[in-house]
Length: 201
Image 1 (cartoon, one colour):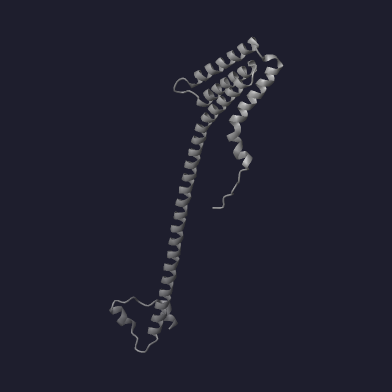
Image 2 (cartoon, rainbow, N blue to C red):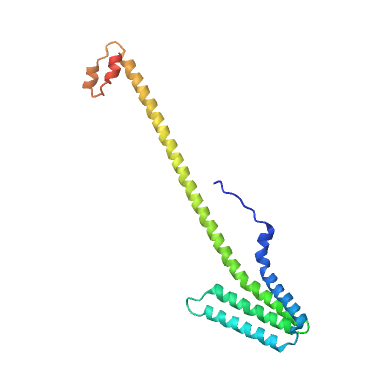
């Protein structure tokens, strides 16, 4: 009932959505810095990045293989392979057009893969919120029913007490009338007056 409402800062909400473009942009910037520092047309550096990208892709394939494959590890390995390939091309190429084209392609693929996980996460969050809402409504309904039952019991007890008091007062008034015979009441099958009430009279 008294849950705290925590509003997320807009930057914290937008940061996961900007993560793919930030990652690919960082790789592109670092690769162009590497290009300016001697990696342009360097066959050795290109071979190194190619070997690393193939190794990361192979690791991702092994991680995804089999029934017990780890999807998170495989996705991380394939993302690393793509990043290494982008860095290798951006570092080796002499112009900026091919690196920018690969950057746009890598960013689109990263958003395509991330959108799947975002949809799954959103679906799970909605299902959890729905479950919590249903449980809250169920508990509220039970609480309302119990409150009504308690009020009903209190009203019944109050009415019974009022009736018993009125009956006792009527019987006391009847006993004070002239010609009242308790034995005749007993013969008629009526309940016997309490001894305390008779003693007071």
